[in-house]
Image (cartoon, rainbow, N blue to C red; front, side):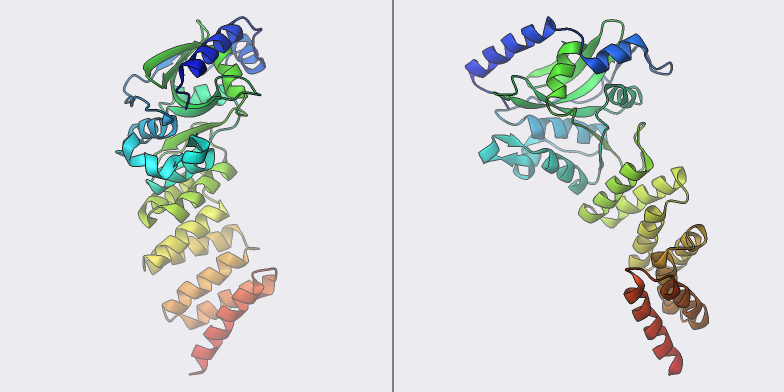
Length: 316
């Protein structure tokens, strides 16, 4: 996002100052006791590079990460979606949303240097937000981390005009910390981040479902259920997509599994009742609907409507 000579000079001085500072906390912990499974050196050399135009670090960084996920994109294509003229840059929420609109999972990482390096080691580049200046004079900048070297305490980035920027790890952490350690991984729908936790990943898939085509969300929910077979949100999400695609057999199977795994779920029993009803299996549908209504809760009125419709049809 920085473009003027004064800004570049200011940033240069600031980065030199950071290089002389004591080691920041996450770096100190990581290098003092690195995870055993973390390779000492990784560089994802195949990640494409797009040179940043003025104030266009967001589109450039996202284009790199989307291409790495197998989705063709250019900064020029992404600029209308991301660039906010009044801000002279791109907002984090728009980076996440644009990723999903293009059919990829946008997963915001935990604010952890170790997690970021684990994603790199797993082959996933990471978009980071840095403040390259001061808290009172911020110069916000997106870059893509493509590698690291623990022995040399260095981070390797595609950044601005540099296809291979090498920063001391301490300098990188200080600039990254000023954004609250904001980082995002972009992945194809069938891939789960190395550091994903169940709740956060399912939330990312649900967000993808709202902003992308049904097929991408279907793939992502299936991947989630392969990892977490009894996750209720993923079960309901997959079943609902199957229902919208008129695959009633698949929808029934998923909702039935959800009802078995979560006998207190109104949604599971109500949706199962609806699918059975649509297959003219009224007795089975009636039983499931009674189960849903009997559970009570905020969804009970919806379940009651389903039950009434089933009973009305059975009286004909």
